[in-house]
Image (cartoon, rainbow, N blue to C red; front, side, top):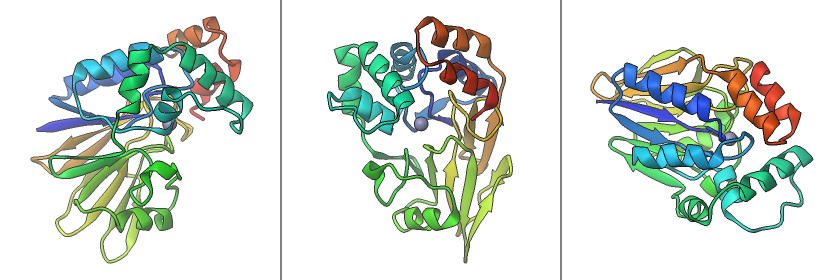
Length: 240
Ligand code: ZN
């Protein structure tokens, strides 16, 4: 049984379509979304439709939460504020209700999924080093947990100590714990502009991170046509 585990789609429909096509070509039969379906890019409603159509487990991201609420946007940086205002205006009430009802943490088969951290899932802090990862490991009760939020694929492995593994293929060993960042579908930030997601082969106990090509120009054209900040289109070229 192979799971495609993906998130930080951020309303990039072209990237989402490409990832789902690649997953199907690699025999994935199950899908799991680690959140941030909306925000930044130009197709929030359409991406929500695609994810809902999959009928798969989904956890809530910080942009999903922000977009589903009516709260003041003061305090965000101008870029985030402008795109969040646009996102709220381009979601239906039903979309917002769906986002509001998402859970923070879920267990799927033998693994856990969360958007940001396991120690305080609703605090939206970032796991960027092994010390951050250790805090999550204290609350990880399954051998594997998949997460996102930093838009950078990486695996933290806890044996006697915590190691950082950036290999594309990770074989799961008994007795160790794995905290796996699947990277971002719609706005990668590790300098590689290609969408990122993971395939988890449960039978073979193997995790593979995949980077794929997509129609970036089309996604950028939509951002410009929508009147969203130019920077949001440009950063898709940089992978930042
Ligand atoms: Zn995100």
